[in-house]
Length: 306
Ligand SMILES: [Zn+2]
Ligand SMILES: [Zn+2]
Ligand SMILES: [Zn+2]
Image 1 (cartoon, rainbow, N blue to C red):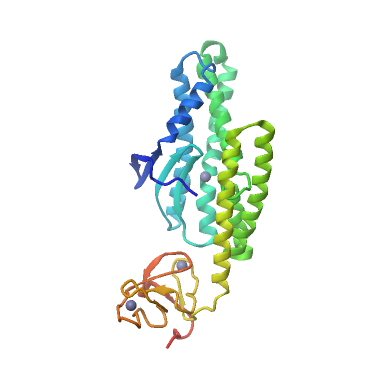
Image 2 (image 1 turned 90 degrees about the vertical axis):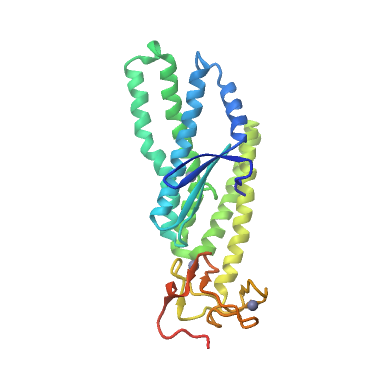
């Protein structure tokens, strides 16, 4: 339920992260600027306000991406689309690493908050509203935009940042599957509230956001159910994934790329028992990371599976 790179074009690359812009951003830009056309005396200031929104969202997404990398995750893409930005982050499958990757986004807005507050207060106290009304309006708008982005993102509604922060915190106490399930169910409650709000305010935009959140909560529930089934499976003692520290499940869960038959990669020591194809890298079914056998952690005792 994320925007794909389809319909997006590459803007630039910074610190190894490629930024894409979705075409619909222009529609929203047009809509946003024309709706506030009387806020400034010149359209140039409207454009400046919109560009500032764009930059604030971009900085927020870079916060996610850089934090994710810091904890050893993968993050090399940001797509800006009308519902904000999406940083494609794949942090290591651990609650702490996930928490930091998610929290770093809103943290950027927290850091920006005093900056914009000083700008706005400076303008107010120096009377710029009379001499430079456009600049005064812009500074006030930036303060509002950043504050609203912060508050909205921190709503505890999965998959908004607040909902994902809640999920990471629950993960510490109830594990990855149950925490996702609880966060998605709370998110559904948030969707109901948003739909009521959209009807009450007759706001189509909030309605669209609510549908988007609903689809993601549904997907989260399905994912949580799969994870719970996986958690319940018997584990092969002796090995643990170097990325998420989970032991692989016991059973024929890997599919041979050559003969397409399922087999147990760990029991057969990386060799397909049907056609004899050998595999040097072992994919973790839990977190998706693919690591050479030597990188897998050998836990207590000798690896079983003979
Ligand atoms: Zn975010
Ligand atoms: Zn793993
Ligand atoms: Zn095979």
